[in-house]
Length: 152
Image 1 (tube, rainbow, N blue to C red):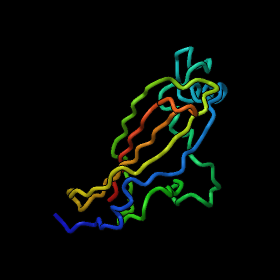
Image 2: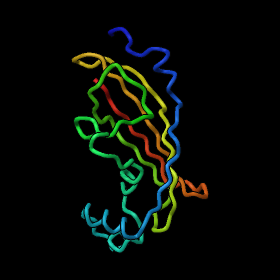
Image 3: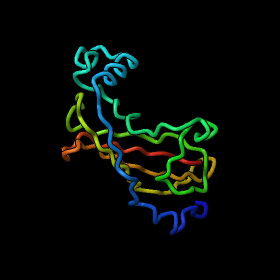
Image 4: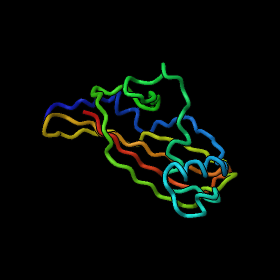
């Protein structure tokens, strides 16, 4: 295996959390998302309950085009500067605890939970994992999302 690209300073970011973000789930937004994603169940189309993955973009910052990277992605300030730059999806696991309904005030907290290196066929790869915990404003668990990204 090649020398490690991960140093103590980089690894010290494990456990770092972003500031919590709060968003309101509205019937109109649930209905728009349901139509846009081709949902068929009436509970989604009527906006009575949010379909799976509704939360994914709910907590994204809305920024100007000048604040996006050349490939159209917002800079994630939770992450440290990695020595490898090309990012790929590495997996997504979502555990749902209760449905999202209109009127729910949701609070999401993202935490960098792991950074590790592996050797790929064309060179070293860095993996990192970010866990987002979504709760209601009263602290009731809604979902936990674990996203893994691969850098090469």
